[in-house]
Image (cartoon, rainbow, N blue to C red; front, side, top):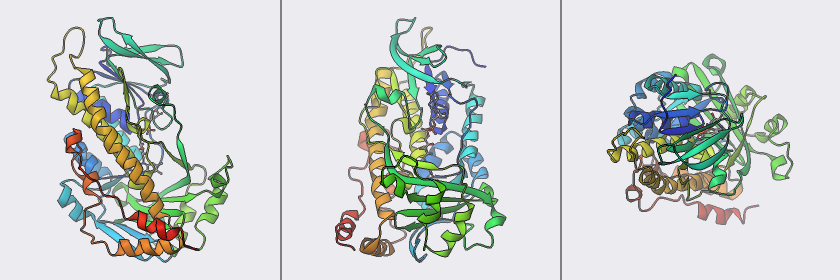
Length: 429
Ligand SMILES: Cc1cc2nc3c(=O)[nH]c(=O)nc-3n(C[C@H](O)[C@H](O)[C@H](O)COP(=O)(O)OP(=O)(O)OC[C@H]3O[C@@H](n4cnc5c(N)ncnc54)[C@H](O)[C@@H]3O)c2cc1C
């Protein structure tokens, strides 16, 4: 185990925390990660990884491994879950040409495992069974400012900076805002099976397919070099809408997709019924840094997953912070890293809060668009079907190079013509 006094403590060993550890270690920063769970692991199934993440994985030298573990789909296709009519598509081969890096799908544990192995290879100090309970600003023995983490077992740890990558229910977030996760009343069921089990179904083994339906959607894509097939069923829980606490249960799954098209009906029995994911986000906040404690990943900006950017934003956060650390050309001294952390954290916050605010709010709008019913659904379909498949208006700001400064963010970012659709919806029966 690496026993150096760390420059940076990271709380949380999910994709966000571990990738930040890799990013900072690559820049010469000594990092210790404290994870609450007894081992570093990920639960869940597939993740979609867009070019704004594969670009960073390439920078870390991890893209080839990730490609070998995942699948490079040929297209992302959106269909109407009612009649399976195609609404629009992204040609992912063309997309790779445009952005220089691929769009891929991968099992969550494979991506997490790749980043974990890289963190181990780089000598990151990785600790488990460490439940962070409180944070404080302190003066370090060197006289420099720093932060302290106190753990549930009564122990503490200190460093120049503490990064809280402790997820949706972040303890550290209370340092900057008094808020709670926002329930969308939607719940996700997942199921991953060997590809042989769906070969007789009406599925694509090469594409990501999203069926959008009234108050629900259904996602399908291959995983693990095409050996596995991943399906995700997402729906609005009537019990959640009625304010009941026991919501999203399998009996609701059984009713949510009634009357929808054949491929969706074929996929539903493959959902795992012992675990489901209630979907929450949080309102965007402009402050992620207080003194020497900074939020990262879902702790800072948990989104609804409709843009498939949650884990990606977490990876981008660590990369941006590390680039600002490196930009300072700091010289390590006997008493610490030599980094001007106040400057680095301010630069990180200045650009990332704005980008992630856009993603979180756009994901909410995107979800509304997917789940329309009545006349609004028909108008949405008309808008999507009229879209040129090679029009990148709605992806450039997300999949393009990750901005390092606010000036590099697009001056304007596109809003889908949803307002028009909502107007019609209010008059629909
Ligand atoms: C159904 C679904 C589908 C999704 N699909 C995609 C997708 O396709 N693409 C995408 O980019 N994103 C997707 N996401 C979002 C993505 O999963 C999250 O945004 C991402 O996992 C956030 O990573 P994180 O490291 O910030 O947080 P987490 O993954 O939540 O990790 C937090 C870590 O901190 C640890 N921790 C928590 N509290 C403490 C504590 N007190 N002390 C120490 N450690 C602690 C936890 O054990 C955990 O290991 C999806 C989400 C859902 C629900």
